[in-house]
Length: 420
Image 1 (tube, one colour):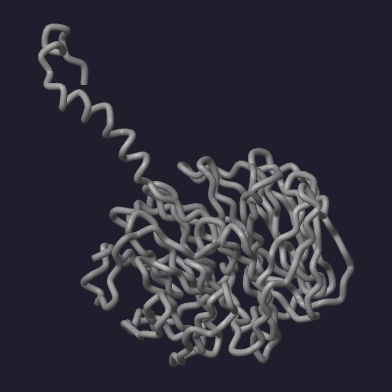
Image 2 (cartoon, rainbow, N blue to C red):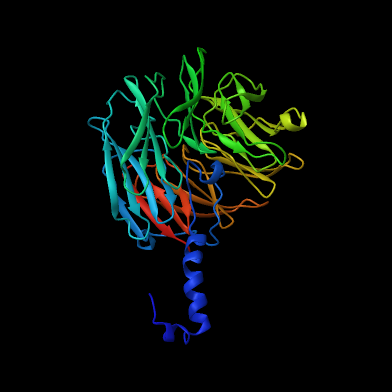
């Protein structure tokens, strides 16, 4: 609002300061959850409070989605983005929702092919990735797979990239991520392993690795490691290739660490100093390695600091916080390990199977079973089951948390749960 000059001179100083600070405060408070498992895939939220027990009356809003899916919601500022698949023809449905009300801001339907799905997959399993300008979505099957960028505020399609057919027993499912203005998609299939990096603005291929390896498909989303010295490293885990670090701009390999020839489904994570990577088979997780990353800048080779071999997750991604490693296995076995000495701090057992990954919110761990039961555990050196809540529908998704609100996705619904 503009005031006449003689009134502007009389405005109280507090009013002038408030008017100047308000836009900055609103911008500074806005929080993003821009990819699978949030910032850099850590699964750690900044919310100070979150309910331990709740009912449907506690949701800020609860909406029915236009299709079904296992993907997780992502958040940027005042928008929540979620994908669904049409069970009849495989159409991809991308929605932008108002975070305050759940109302649809825009919806885009992208043509796709239906195919015979594995019972543990859906037509919308990949979680989108975001930056301030665009949303990146991926989908695919035996007839073809696509990476597409949409304008974040309007949903207008900007570009798409053809990944080619995807052939694997469990079908398509890896999620994209953004690092240094590059969109990275891991496209490891049962007989072909591809890692592709695309220019975020144009979709132009910057680099690609393509290897004809006879190995099970990989579903892990890479993460970024930023060493104290030297450039950012793209960390990827790949079946029969182990853990590797690449230059995100060129695809050049920095270092590689071989692990047993098990399959990678859970994503790698970092606490800024160490990496954790877990691999396994249909029987469950088989080995977890805590790794000190290598660094070409300092001629440092990677090193395995800790090995864990019991009660490991296969699909759910682990979580590191305050020197503690939290493992939430598919079977419902949970445990906490101190990274300093490798000793087990606690363990427990929950009812159900878990395919989504845990997140940490306000000192508590939240994980959702495939039956749609949300379990809440205390995060810290002592095991304590704090709560169990029925979400009223099956779920294969991971919660998202931004600006003090947790977004829970079931097969056909999305709910917004505010903090206490």
